[in-house]
Structures are given as structure tokens and as C-alpha cells.
Image (cartoon, helix red, strand yellow):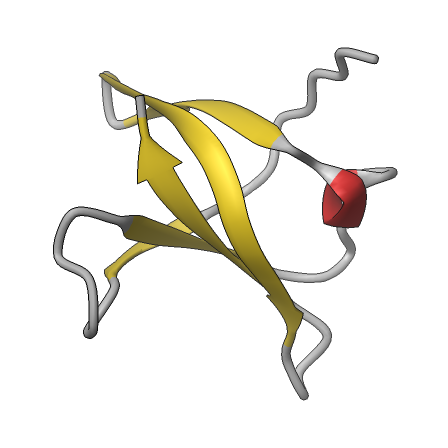
Length: 70
């Protein structure tokens, strides 16, 4: 099922795998985001997309997704 949401995100590099990137989404999270298998983002005019490899709920309620780019 495809969903679309507008929300703030932060981009991060993945320390152990420079080919991946991570996004951090602060709470409140868009509905069903924790079950995402793929993401397609528009950040500062750039399009980023890929398969979600790992998701982690952080202590502050935010969600961190590690993504393998397309």
C-alpha cells in the first residue's frame, strides 16, 4: 500500500556503510511509517529513494530508518 506524508526529516550518514543513508523522523510520526519497506523522499530539492534495511525507534520518540539507495 502506498502512502504519502509531509513531515520534517533529518539526513544522516551510516557509519558502517557509506553506501546507505539514514533518515530521522521526529514524533509525531506519520501513520504506518514504521512498517515502510521503501521510501521516496524529496529533501531540499533532491530526490532520495530506496529500500528500508533497518528501522529503530529512538528514546525521544523519533524513528530512524536506514535506507539502501536505488
